[in-house]
Image (cartoon, rainbow, N blue to C red; front, side, top):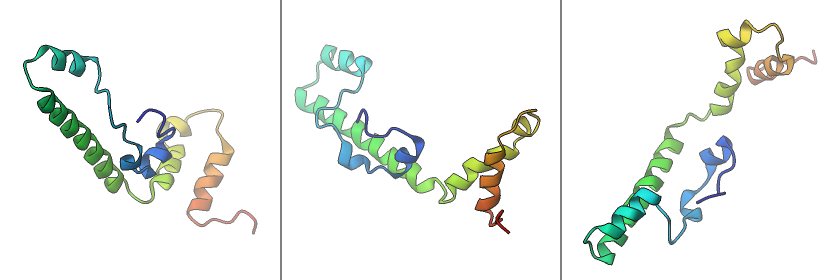
Length: 107
């Protein structure tokens, strides 16, 4: 699945099932253990499929548990202690947060 999601936003909306690699590489550790063990190729393929299915299920669960107001929550970080104590602040970030809550700066 390399290159499928490029940002957090992509990760939250991507359909992982559409980007699966049919011959997924599960990492050096898995591949080295798989080649050393005395399991049949079918057993290794089954383990590989279960690992992939688990990861797909994990991504889907994370996507369903992220609140729909994720973008608003990201903007609230401008109110964090670290950001409020900075001497140089990003004025646009606070304006964007205010707009998110319905403030209209044009009035």
